[in-house]
Length: 99
Image 1 (cartoon, helix red, strand yellow):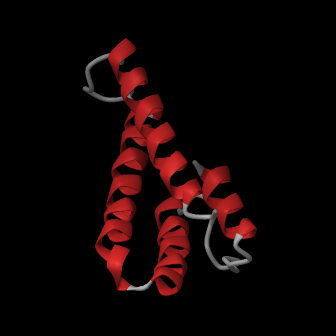
Image 2 (spheres, one colour):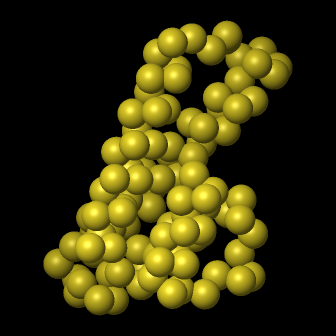
């Protein structure tokens, strides 16, 4: 997710020098705001929803990365399936905006 959010900004020539690579939500927001400016307001709410979806998927990834710590229940097959599927969907749709 870090590399995807960095590469989407590079692809669109959007400078993000001040953003830490781990700040993927901020990077995706920067890309989507730039895209929104090019697309007009018709899809604005949709693109805002992508920021929320990306943030939720990012939170899920963090939970899985650190899921064995503390009192969290053990991770299982469905945890992996959920994360991989939603990362794929959100990356696919955001990438489609570059075409």
